[in-house]
Amino acid sequence: MALTPSNMLALGTKAPSFKLPDAISGNTLSLEQLKSDTATVVMFICNHCPFVKHVQHELVHLAKDYQPKNISFIAISSNDITSHPDDAPDKMRAVAKQLGYPFHYLYDESQAVAKAYDAACTPDFYIFDKNLKCVYRGQLDGSRPGNNTPVTGKDIRDALENILDHKPVSADQKPSMGCNIKWK
Image (cartoon, rainbow, N blue to C red; front, side, top):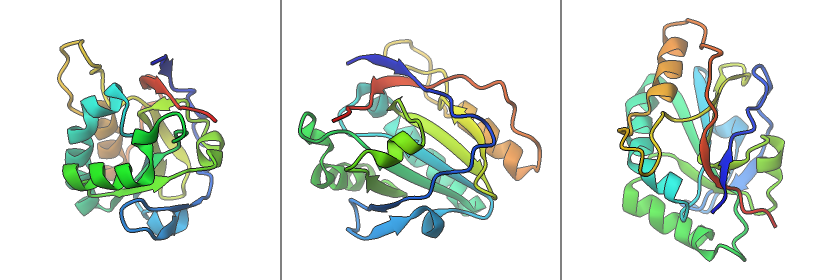
């Protein structure tokens, strides 16, 4: 496991379009189908990473808290499944069902979507406004495995609250940290 920070996509960047298979339903879904007219959270996650496992339950709570407020959540796994078979679509589906993921969990087999978003680690988080412009990229919160800081989703929650209150999202954003994406 290589501890890797987010690359911090430039604020204002338009969300790259994609069409990817959903490991849960088997349907191919696009950003245009899944986006929200309020805000869209794109999360690069996987099954095996201890940093993702550390926050999985909060991801479920976060989505359940904000989906009723017209915030869309999209999870994407881009890891190479040859080197990391635990991240294969059948395993993604099993984890999503076990944890009750209330969001789509898409598989980026070619890794083109991760590259388009300049994703570097799992978990890596992006929030796009109603026009699909990046207003936040970085950490869920300050919690990491072993640092005894509670997992609250504070940084993402603060950004989403600002969007819902029609206030600007603070540009003071900290990178996420986690396992590097397992490139082919």
